[in-house]
Length: 145
Image (cartoon, rainbow, N blue to C red):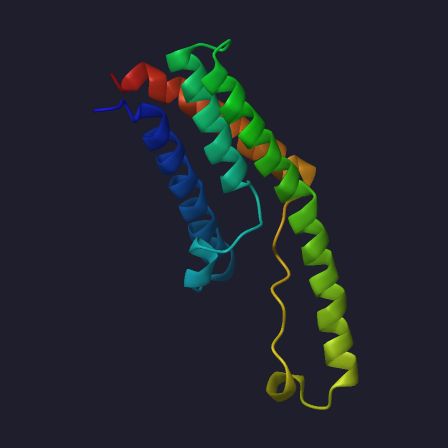
């Protein structure tokens, strides 16, 4: 049976951070928005935290000079670049398109569906997520045999 310590670390870190975003939304507004538990975007990046935790855990288990660490590190960098680049750009485009819909349709709520605007992350949100992931993996390595 393969050791899935790195997998569980990444999964739990991602879920905890996504859960934090849902709970912090409630703390700010006083209302539950259950979609916030699964939506993308916001501070910190749960995707970045999860892949950084995965790479760090793999590095601690297999060695930071291993092929497996190199592969997970590459995967992590692609995910973080995508979060701060492509998905953020798509979110900015959604803001503009939603504004155009609001301005040019008589009844936008009936004629079209608003696009989701919070898709990506700022580079700072990605950085904070990555740092949380690395720190979590270091703690996880100490407490999980």
